[in-house]
Image (cartoon, rainbow, N blue to C red; front, top):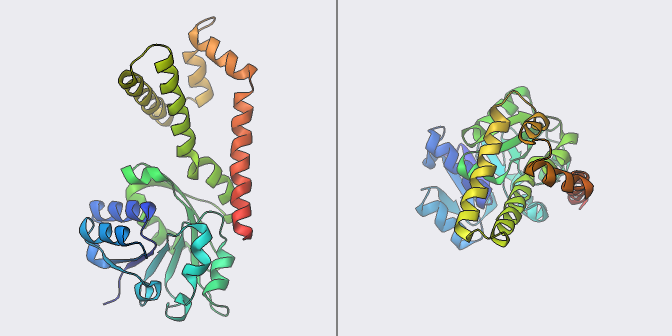
Length: 271
């Protein structure tokens, strides 16, 4: 019996997508299959998600209607070997590998066929149903293919459509973005402890502050800049912190950091 969806790689992102599909009722576990060489990951998919697993990629993709390439970028060329020989040209191929172009995937699957490839960049908050994903079509992917790809991500993420040349920027902003927020949290908590708070109270207050601020930013008609200004009373405590950040070019350095992430995404695509 052919499967509706096959995962090549059963890591955290594949798990997040699968959990979203199952919990939303979009796709049942028995309509999915996953391939991974790691026993622990196959065991998790089998026992917790009730999804059939195999060790061989070729076995997973045979007759599958859609495939999500969920390996690390550095492993994708190996993962793609041989699967083009058993994969239907009608299959939808979705990649979540940072930096790897649709052209590379098309070529790796085999020349002379119009492979329907959609490249995506999701992020780890999909694990809690609050992800952000951008989709970009390859040469032969249609509007219908993009719509089909959206359905695999929408249960656990906000989805936007863009062009492939923008995906390195997407990687820098939202793909790697959760790590920046965690880094901020790390240091807010550390500062709280240094200022005399207990570890427990510093964590509770910092985490809730980031959660609340993010919710305000998402739901308010005001821009983040306006929201910041509303919190910053003249000559107050917030202004003292903002002035220090501005004096030390923290805003500019954040932009430099995201530029470095985007450049690394480009480098990954060249390998």
